Length: 164
Image (cartoon, rainbow, N blue to C red; front, side, top):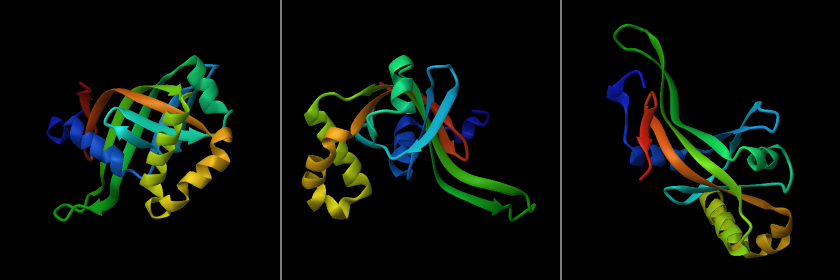
C-alpha cells in the first residue's frame, strides 16, 4: 500500500469481505492464463469461505491444477468531488485475500456451506432451503476457500495482513 495511513487491520478487511455483494475470485487456468470472476461467497469462519457452481467448468478445472486463488472485495464505492480543490476521486473500501481452493466432497459440509450462502443472500427464504437442497445437491458443486493471508485493506486503498 502506498499510503500507510489508509492501512487497516485484518478484522476490518474481513468486514469489507462480509459486506461486499460479491467477491471477485481470480484463478489460474490450466494453460496459465488468468481468470477472474465475481462470485457470491459466504463464510463459516474468518478463514473459511464458500461458493457454489456447476459440477464442471473453468473454475473447477483451474482449481484442479492451481488451487491458489486471490479474492478481491470492494464496498462503499462512491465517486466524489473534493470540496476544497474540486478534484475528482473515488471513495471505497477494499480488501484482498489469498487462499487455497478445493472442492468439498463431504455431504454435510456441502449442505452447511450452501446454508451459509443462502442465509447470507436469501435470509427471508430459508424455509425453502431443505427442499431446494434435496432437489439440487446432486448437481451442485461447492468449493471451500481457506484464507492463507489478507493483504492490504483500507479506506480508498488496500492493506496487508497475515491470518493467524
